[in-house]
Image (cartoon, rainbow, N blue to C red):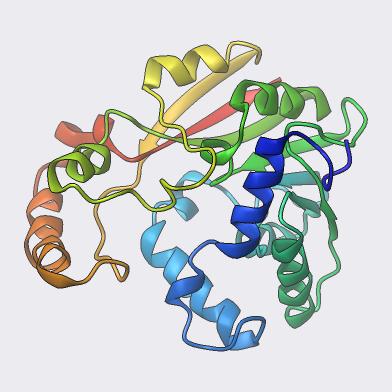
Length: 258
């Protein structure tokens, strides 16, 4: 399917993400500059500090890896620098243009395409690995996206997939504080329970779910609520022994094998 076509919801999603590039508002340098991408990378490492522990970015050398919803390419560049043969797709043409620019700064040449992750324009059994972090919560039909990811994976290939945990500290906090979650106003926004996510992964031969993403200081919220969150809540929550709260992480990451 042509990424510029699709359903009215698909068009709304594309328009939203053309306007709301992930974490754009934390950058202090001009959009598309080297400093801009460094700002976004620094912020991602702050917010998603668990990622290098959960995802072995250096473990895909000489393998064909597809990222669905690559955004400006922050994670895809990590795979590419470690020797993976990378392809990135995104519904947002603005994101793809920025990703191309980002890769140019790193002297890398990926394959980047504007494409709907629910309608992947690739043959079956084409990739050794598929990575989708930060995209499935915002797609129209998450089950269709999972089945498309499964289809393009080679037998024995690995999928790394992330969704939001409805039984999380952040979901509960947003309800109690009456503060919307980031991008909750997107045309499509989903949360799931661990059991629901496990059910969606039944197409795979095997899978396991890792629950992560605990409080870190925010740059997005100001005022009294932001002050209380940064100066009090973050430290108090992280003082709780992790085994007691592990299941309440905001991100659920699946490692699944075809």
